[in-house]
Amino acid sequence: MYEHFFQCPYCWEEVSVLLDPSVSTQTYIEDCEVCCRPIEFQIAFEENELVEFQASDIEQ
Image (cartoon, rainbow, N blue to C red; front, side, top):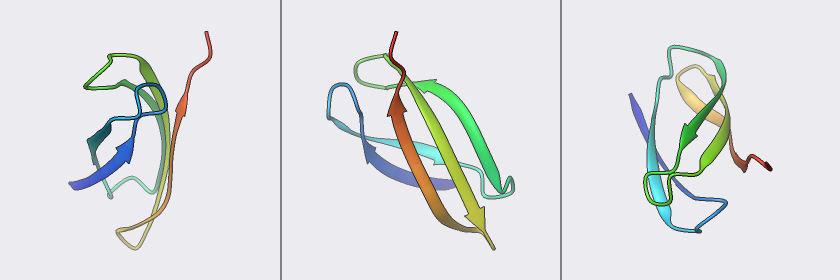
């Protein structure tokens, strides 16, 4: 597993997420650990290295 720190697009707190480099491209939704609002993650790995990371708010 790969730990990555990022800033929540809602509350702007720095939080971390565990990423699985065995899956080369991933898109999923997970709640912020601080404010509990849903964040959409778009992630890509190449040769077990993180090459793309986006954490976006989900407008409701």
